[in-house]
Structures are given as C-alpha cells and as structure tokens.
Image (cartoon, rainbow, N blue to C red):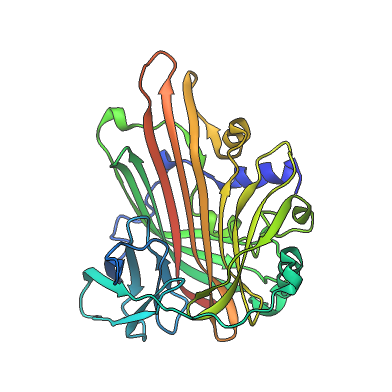
Length: 366
C-alpha cells in the first residue's frame, strides 16, 4: 500500500458529523423490533465486552460495547425465533424472541467453557503462511456474486460522558463479488435516517474526522485488500501466532500483527481470526498506530478550525463476518475515535469520543 492509496481510503471515509441530514422525517425503525440488554459473566457477574449477539439462523447480529451493552434492531417479519450470545471461551446462550413488542433491559448470562479447544495444527507456527493461505481462499469462502445488504447504522459523539449528537439510519449496501477484492463499484445508500443534536452552543464540534456509512465498504478488510490483506501489506507487518480460541463454537486461529516498517503514513496493529476448518477470516480487531501522532492526525482528521489543537488518543476498528449457507458475509463494522481538543489560549481541553457502527440485518442476491 502506498501513500496515495492511504490518502484515497481515508478521504473517501470522511463524513461530517455536523452535516448529517435525515432523508426521511419518519421514524427510521418503524418496521423493526428493538432488543436491548447486557451480557454478563455468570461466575464473576462482570459485564462482557465484544460479545456476538445474533439472530439464530441468519447473519443478523451486533457486538456488545465496553459496558457489555447491546442494541439490535430486526425486521418484524424475520422467521427466526431465538437470539444467541456467543463469546470466546464461553458457552453460547440462547433466549426466545417476543415479536409482538420490543424487548428492553435483557440480561444474558454466559458460563465459562473449559476444555473447548481440540489439538490444533499450526502451519509450522508460521503465521504469515497461514494468513496468505486464508487470502487465497477468499474467492471460495465469500460471495462470488453481487449482494445487496440492508444494515442499521448508528453514530454518536460524546463530550466527556455526555452525548452531544446521535444519528441513526437504515442503509442499503451494494457489494460486488469478493473474488476481485476491490471496492470501487460498491455503494452505500441511506434509505431512512434521523438525527438528534445538543442545543448547547458550547457543544458544537467544528471538526471533520474519519467516519460515516461508507465504513461498511472501506473497513471490510476481506473485500478491500489495500487496508490489511494486499500483497504489499504483507511486507509491512510481522505476524505472530496467538493462542487459538473458540468463537461461535468453532475453532479459530488467532494471528497478531504489528508494523515493522517506518512509512510516510500510519499503519495498524491488531488481531486476525481465521476459521480452523475453512480458513475464512471471521474477525479483525485493529487500531491505528499512534507512535507518530502527526501521521495519525493526517490519517483521520479532514478539517479543523485555525487555532484548535486536535490530539487523537485512540483509533480502533472491529469487523466481524458470519457464515450463512456455506458462504461468509460481512456482519458488523465498528469504528471508535477518542480525541482531545483545546484552543491555544485556553488552559483546559475537552475529551470527545466519535463512535460509529453498522450491523447487517439482511442480504439478498442481486
């Protein structure tokens, strides 16, 4: 990946949180059921982060946040009647759905699952070879035809602990074949949307940063090879095998990666999860390397007022995939940016968190 490609990626992802305009004045979720709740460890009573919560038999799902909380919107005409919560190292748990009304304040308990892992043969402990083999199998494991995904998109901005902006939308995502690993012809369309903004003048945030519904295109690391899985990228990173885990009761290789070259732009570090049987990429957790703050700022900041100091603290991503009828599909995308802003002549800075996520609720063949 060269500097031109990095710039192309992030410039297309730029989305102004301050100019999100609803395309429909009606409630964006009128044809959906809303399920909210929290997932906890049954033994320790602690809340669990990054738990997969999905509709059984479909690719519809979401992931719990740092507080173990989840929110899922499903169509009222969905045939599935159970919700399943699954997490690495825990037994999956199912709860029945009540399709007549919204289900709020659900608590799902997960129990530890000892001795879940069988013996694993690890490609001579060569993590890079494993990743390369998984890349070769992308045309087999993922959709080879065009798909139209329906998704629920949400973005929020917090100032400290207080929400100052919330936007939600139903989006249609057109995806071409995964065989090419190109996104140039993929598209996103907002079909319905709504926005809530703080009325306090001091809450106005006049910066533009990485985000927006296009994340469902450009953070699809399997489809968009120039992010992590392109040929040139393999030279930029070191790959190290981690302890295998069970995810959705399927054994997963885990590969840690981190940058080994100093390039003119920021790279990433994180984890790749690869299905033991199919070698399909099932999950990617990665963050922007913050070693050089100037490079990190260049990667995510599009515009700011003169005199405002922008200091990124964290830029992280989560992308998950789910198997359905023999093929693996994009399931969930999440982006979190934590940063501080202050003016040169002021003593104190303000902390902000820009959060966006897209969960796939349906997919059909074009």
